[in-house]
Length: 231
Image (cartoon, rainbow, N blue to C red; front, top):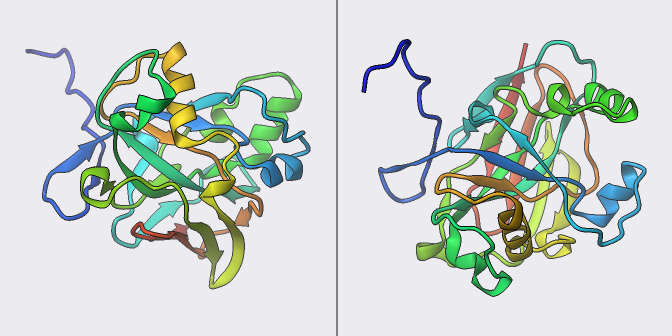
């Protein structure tokens, strides 16, 4: 096929243990999926239906090895949000909860980096969050651990440190909506496709980073990530 201009390169992630890479299609992000984080954002942690926002594919940064991401423009409040990332290997719509994990290729550690000042300003004005959330290089993600090789991740400590100091610390068992439930609910509204990623939400303790800070994200059972904020 001939294109009028050169197509954008495919964004991809390292897959642990094999040479093949995971191509990133779309990135869906679950909002306020830990009760304590909902409270720190001034919201009730009731088990309302989950809501989603999106990041572009080029938000993903392969963080299988230590990596740097630039401090983005137009913000003075750049926040880290550590998250369990689910990689979809088989598409589908109206997926049943008890069949949802059949669609999971694997899991990874990720950071949903956020221009918090822009996000909150948009929220307060009833405007979309794109400038706060949906920008390039805003989702460093570690090596994808294949479910076929490692099994499914139902529990595990999740944490991030900044310059060695603890910031966020919780457990993925505290997700308000489980991985299976997020997949099933999302598939009612949007047919999932191979290569989609779901970032499942962040626990409490989100805070700002500045140029020079080094974030280390961990989830038990997965490869951790080291991400430096560059000028």
